[in-house]
Amino acid sequence: MPGLRTLSTGTVLAMLVAPFAGSAAGPVPQQSAGAHAGTGAACTRHVANPRSLAAIQPGDVVCFSTVSKTSRLHITKSGTADKPITYSGKGQQVGGIDIDASYVVVDGYTMTKPSAPGIELHGDNVTVQNNTVTAPKGDDGDGLRFFGNNLIIQHNTISKTDNSTGAHADCMQTFATGDDDVASQHVLIDSNRCEQVDNMCLIGEGPNSEAGDGSGIGVSQDWTFSNNYCQTQQASQTLMIDDIQHLTVTGNTWAAGPDHAIGLQNHSTDAHVNDNKLDPSIKCEVGIDSSSKKGYQGPTPRCDP
Image (cartoon, rainbow, N blue to C red; front, side, top):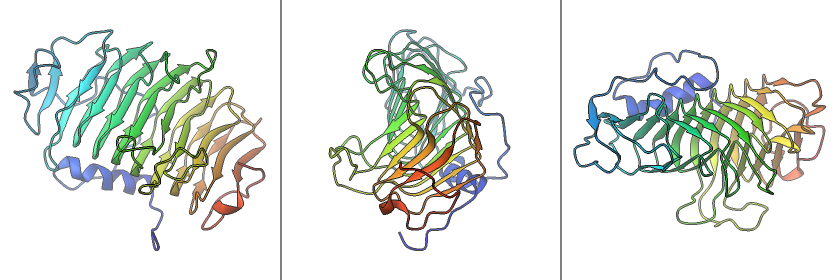
């Protein structure tokens, strides 16, 4: 994508939020990383339970009177470009969240030992914010997976992912392997907390990943990973980026001591890395292979990915 320029975090957030807001976005206030449940918009539509979707209209802020604390919450009704639907949890406990919708905001739910991934997102123009996922269980143990375009993942707290069962338990993950699990573009991941995460804070694999199971369809590109707190306890790196182009990594805190903070491999070109805070035990901030060096800006890579 020749000529793509790297934007500041505030600019990227304003651009991504604009389709939801219905008006020009103003300055983006900086808050501490992690969930701020209960700070969302007031409910405009009270619905008995997640099966009662008929009354929901574009632009509604939806609150469910009754949700199961152990079953997954399924978000399936979409808003529109100028009138997104906000699903407001205000701290409600659910057994996980599946999003299969577009033009929605999912805000302020709590999950304790949900089936993994705690949150799974398929859709375009989706914001996931202020949610708390603790100790996801089963499958590969991930806290959150995302697939789609124009996504904002912000102010979530994901903790206690567990590799002990043989899982590959990441805080966040995406890949591009088929019609449902598509390549993702224009993604902002900002001000989240990944605490006591056994595996990686983020692993992103594009459609031509080195794993060899990619769909070969589309491009994964234009991501910003900013202002996040990442505590990786067992993996060799905090971020593993494979076949993702035009990535900005800025303002993050690498709080634990993996071998290196960021791995860029398999044509992950045009990455920009700056202003991250490293745990003193991390001797190499960026590892990179020869195919990913084109357009790289940031600290001198000192190791392999």
